[in-house]
Image 1 (cartoon, rainbow, N blue to C red):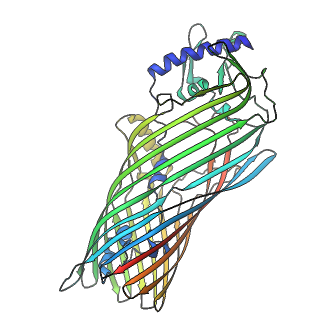
Image 2 (image 1 turned 120 degrees about the horizontal axis):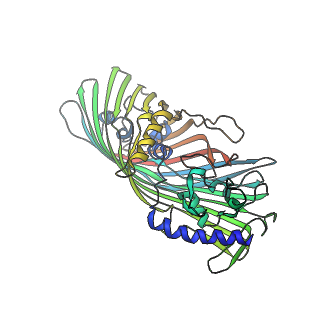
Image 3 (image 1 turned 60 degrees about the vertical axis):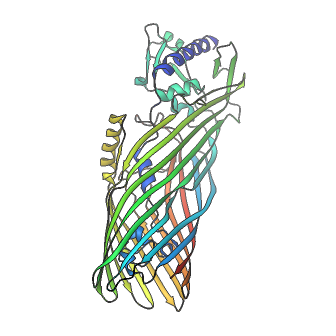
Length: 534
């Protein structure tokens, strides 16, 4: 094995000199799924509307009208100042399943912030209504933790970095000359190794090995931590265009941050991998023998800033029934991302080999790009009486019109946009809310539905289709003390997901048995708010 080791380490040194000098980190963090994740939002914001699952396009006198339909501001009878505290608690149940083994783990994540601040001013008028409003609203939370663990004798992470035939080139002497980014980084982190001696025996042989010997039993553990939230600052107004019609508009600044940290580890806990299976000779003559443990760590930090506008109409078709329409322009986001990947392999004897801890290492870098969301068109109807309010909304969003662009890598983004047109489709989001008044007490409930815009069927670990539609249920209450009101809202969202633990690129998975983790995610949002009317 030593001859193979020596040749591999010499090639590693040469490749570092060639690739590090001539190859910039590829922007691999931007995907259609990233863009959809960043720009989707909760059905509701604010304490009152959280209890109603966000239904209110028909027209509702609440500061969240700036988020739903700004024409609803026109129904304010007094000026007001409002604030709310917003908490999120999310649980993620994972299913790790391999032949002969399965396990489930639950992991919770929580965060609390100021969720809403709003000022609404109803101007004195001799006739009709003219209302101005401004609000800060938290519109989405990324809070989520995934943990999984199990044993696997079918596949290993290290196989995922073996290069395809068109991802490496050999020189005239059979030495490794060029290696694509992903296998190059793993090669320098010790997860794979090149052995030209295989070619001496057979010119058509595959000259790479992975750190973990295929078929050996290993322990796998992983964690994925998501943090961040999206916020919106809105400025808008509404006026009474006719005796039964309110018209409103708002300009909205959207901003937030998203952080992802993932760690995947494999350990030879049963000691099935020895020095005869895998070893590496270091540049200083040191020898690393026998796979013991590997770690694959990724991080992504995204800062987003966007702007859009909304216009809305609310008409009283009868004294108790309101019909509303709203149009939201595309949101134009600028995204600044920092991303990186670290590889580390520990051996039974000799120490460890690592790569990716320097900013200029392949797989690390910064990148700026833009996201343009689709138009949003909404229609809603509401029944309002002294005792009960019932509201229902439908919102049309064509996700195939989502676009990503950047000043560089234009071909890369052109391919992404073609994939979005083919793989995503239009959806119709729905919301329903009911409010019942018992004197000064208000009881609320609701439900919302957001279909999955991806029209490509994904498979769970058992081979069945994954259903990623999001379903929401809500409840809330409020109490009015003359010119002071306290509101509480709860909204629970549920959806299923899968996590592909092994890396993929545009060439697809690099092995026949990629590890898939099934997820059931439940996110609970709680909002407590107060409003003062004057």
